Structures are given as structure tokens and as C-alpha cells.
Amino acid sequence: MQKNWKLALVALSIMALPACVTINIYFPAAAAEKAADRIIDDVWQLKEKTDGKAAPATSQQETK
Image (cartoon, rainbow, N blue to C red; front, top):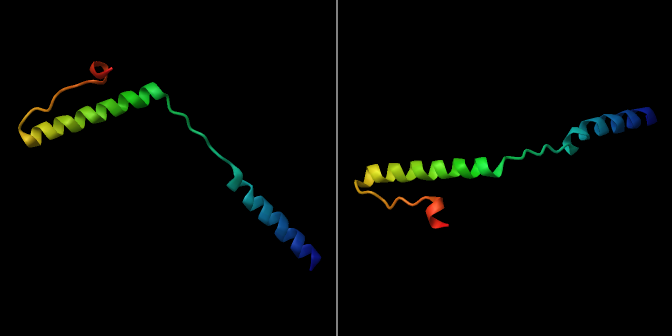
């Protein structure tokens, strides 16, 4: 009976080990900002097409 408990404890430890692994993924800030700007520009263009009137075109460089 004691052997079963030890085996169960070892099996539980082996299964719990992968749960403690953390994977960190880092994205370059400049690339993420550029992608966000492109998405915002695409959304404004879609809105212009549906509204029929042009929205003010401001880029991030103009607002700085």
C-alpha cells in the first residue's frame, strides 16, 4: 500500500511539472505600433467608404 502512495506522488509530480513552465513572448514595440497604425488607417478608410465623406487624415507624426 505504501508503494502505491509513492508511485502516485511521483506520477502527480511528473504531471504537475509542465504546469509550472512559463513561455514569454516579446514583440518589438516599434513593429506592434506600426501594425496598430495600419489597422487604424484601414478602419478609417472603411468608415470613409461607408459614410461617403472623408474623415480628417491625421497621422501619428502630425499629432506629436
